[in-house]
Image (tube, helix red, strand yellow):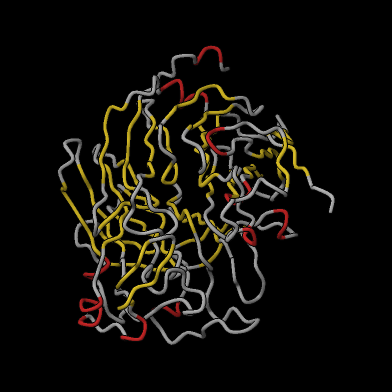
Length: 417
């Protein structure tokens, strides 16, 4: 069989239509984080010693805020990390907070808040007896445990949020476990994906993966992959005040069935976020969608509950990421998309025209590859071959303008313009 080779780096660049800037990536299988220019050249890199857990962001002060993957996690659910670290431009750690124990671990997401504190997303363990006491159907609780990757999972691991200050003191927290029920502002403990699709039995219940914060309205945005919806949480009261994406989690809406999406809108979404106009931008993965696998980017208006813009490729092979993924609305109205599984990052106009296309060349340990090929450039464990997960996988990508870097006092800013 002939081997298929794919060129890496920048494949296309329309200088007149792009939102010029520098793109930050933290390849999933590498310990390095890179800032690249529009030609794909690295202009700065950080050696972080551990792989990401799962992404990094640049702060207004010029520092890098990055989640790290610590060893010996109590779970093997996708996205576990364990630590948040802040690096200066020289790669020195200036702050860090570890959230990892036998019964709790940070995963997926974090958010530096306007007050300087940091909010983290985590999983916490609940035993078989605790789940039963809350009304979970016993046949869906892991009593004897399920062995995955040498870890035995028992009970359930619901999500929680914690806010810590610069002294690593907890100043606020929210637990999904405190909001159980079947009302619109509650989470149904017995809602779950079809058990044949549940990874790790039913231990990974809601599998949230993104958080954001609306300072003006003091509202937290929390996105759930397994429930296929996002929530607005009132920061002051902790109440769920809005949800969107999947009515079947809390109403008698028509559920998906063979070849029929029912009344479910999102399927396994990631990276839900607030836009300046009050709308929400979402990476809707669309994996195992009854009407066909497809990924898309959705912008919806929470005031009308309507989708106001969306993008999907004409062919799923052109843009598809069953797991993970990110999207960013740029200053000129374009959207930067990270199709995580294949390390594909591209920029599109509001009309859906691609104006910048980049394939991440960084594989395991930061190894640079000019070409990827379909014989070896995949996850060596093999279980994700059908999902297209490759060694150059990138969880999220962020584009930063020249002005942002200038304000962040990037040391070599004059050589970049």
